[in-house]
Amino acid sequence: MENNVRFPHLLKADIFEGLDAGFKKDFMNACGVKIYRNPTTVFEQGEQAEGMVIIAHGYVDVNFVGEDGHQMFLARAKVGATLGESESVSEEPCAASCVTSANTTLLHCCAADLITALQNPGFIKNITKIFHHRLVYDNWVKHIAQFGAVGQRLRGYLYILSDQSKTIRETQSYLANMVGCSRQTINRELAVMREAGLIAQSGSEITVLDRSALGVGLMV
Image 1: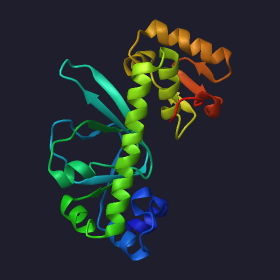
Image 2: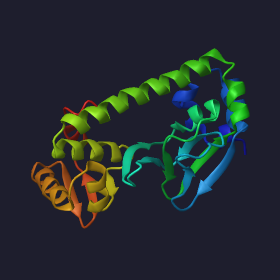
Image 3: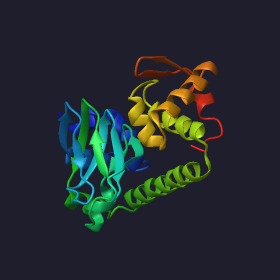
């Protein structure tokens, strides 16, 4: 089955916005399909990227590891998102690592096909719009990291993590690493959110009850 038939929802992905049906079909059908049953690193920070990927199902976490060994969560890329395009075209090493969730399906586009697609002005426009959206997101992350209190930073990350599912299955240690505080502080802030009716908890599982309220004032 051709990819455009197998994954029709991707025809509405940001990278294909405004492009004609023939271009989208040809581009998608030239991609390889890989299914990752377990969390897998598809791009390794500091290594060369082997083309671009489009997320068909599941999600991909983007993480950066500093020289001190500390890992920082950057983003959770959802269905329709693209990764690896800038490194593939520039032939620069990956700026961060990308790890799939379990049962994630990716379309892989080789660098040569990506460069050929860049002959289409509409495709170039879409890629630059994606880059612009990332800049806006990066500005938000830097702003909230510098000026946001711990509770605001935690709400921001929970807002991001709940984009596709209201249920978040991450340990308090993981959240503490994301936010940059202790597990005890995370526990206190989660209690405040529970009392406010924003979330519910069952063990390490967090359910977002009111995502709109959770995101108020976050500039996400």
